[in-house]
Each structure stands twice: as structure tokens, then as C-alpha cells.
Length: 73
Image (tube, rainbow, N blue to C red; front, side, top):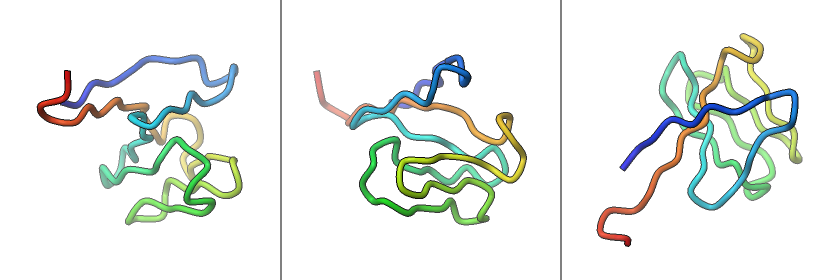
């Protein structure tokens, strides 16, 4: 199940094992966790490196999404 979450980007980027950042251009996902240390979405708009997260489009270039495993309570 996929759920978009509103958050205040000026207070940092939330992270958890079921939180991902979705590129608004290609829909690619990047983990909110520090592992892997370097990660990009398929189109290269969304980039994570050593705990820093950003997009070529600025703050509006990504959305926070919660994805829960199917069958998980």
C-alpha cells in the first residue's frame, strides 16, 4: 500500500524503513535511510549522497511516500 505524506522540508527529511522519496518526473524511488549512501532515481532528478537529499528541480521535485508490505499488519 502506497500513501503520500505531507511534511515540512525546512525541518529536515523524515526517514524510516518504509519511507521513500519519489521523483515527480519519473516516479523512481530513493530510500529515506542512509543505506545505500549514494542513490539516484532513474532520470537523475532525485539524488541522495551521504545523508543529503535533493533534486534538480528544488523542493517540489520529490514527494515523501510510505510503502507498507502487502499482508503486513
